[in-house]
Length: 214
Image 1: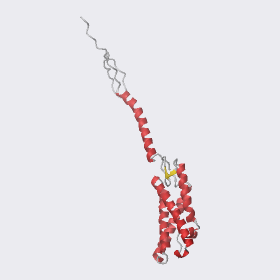
Image 2: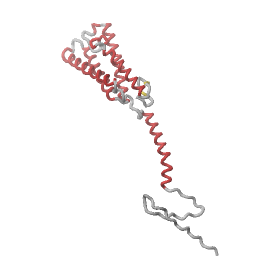
Image 3: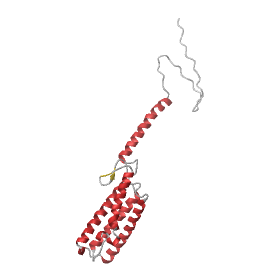
Image 4: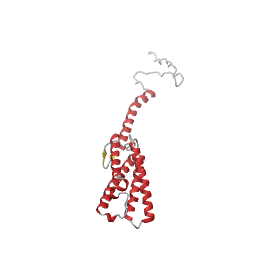
């Protein structure tokens, strides 16, 4: 008579760090060796981590999350630019407020233009100080509007002085303020362009940073 199969002797595993001693299960012939949970988890964790990193990097490249556009606008010389814009916002706003309150009927166009200039200066000041993609676009739009306004109003005031019985902030290209209103938007746009390039992006579509840059 054939002898019955004997069950292999169970060997004791050395004590582990995470639990008591476990007895190894008998291994039958022809049965594939099963991987433990720790091995499966270790083998799968590496590729998942690399895939997650790649997906996260791709999402940041598409949304610009890797670098904040305009995040360095108020750094270095940008702080001086923000300070000058803040001074002009206060000066133009105070002047327009007094003129509209006391003598609006004398030169309504000039006084309304001064109030509009003050609003543009306030918008540019806040956008330059805050930084970020949205603020970068607002700053570009504000500086562009300011440049167009001072050129248009300056040209009209020179061509037809009678249309401006009293000066606005942009009359005669900002002569009443030492032509600073003419120079300021140019400096603002140049600084925004510099920060966009320094951040890794290139200005496109009206100054919008691409490639996740500033």
